[in-house]
Image 1 (cartoon, rainbow, N blue to C red):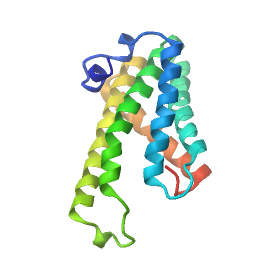
Image 2: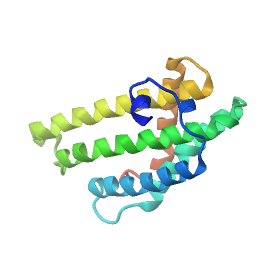
Image 3: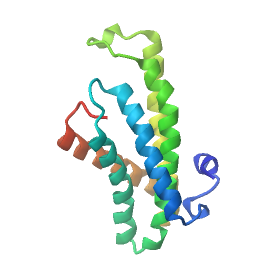
Image 4: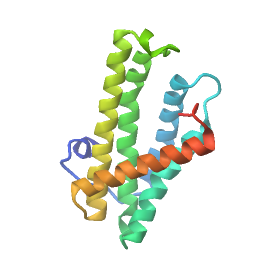
Length: 170
């Protein structure tokens, strides 16, 4: 099912309405994101930042669905967002490992680091498109509106995350 979501073949409505599945995916998401954060950040892994990101991933669509009067769609939408988020986190692991430690001066970047940097940008763009696809089905809006909503959610998470945790957080 998640593969079909990633390929834009299905929407969140095709996933089972299961609190257990969503809970398992949430735990798995936190564990994988802790590993990813450990690769990105020197020092202790910021569990609160990882948990905060997951809570925003659930809260922002919940708020949008509530405002649209579509609350019954929340379980499947959240499951789709968390499940595809796990896939993107797994895809990001080798990319982040490939980038390695960044030099202080950007002109000292190695060619492989630049390649992995471009791959990470492409991966982020694809992730926004997939989230937009999920949100368009959940909200009954065109794809471009779903993508704009996904971009807005990303910006909100980035701004609030920077305000709460500073620039050194994952």
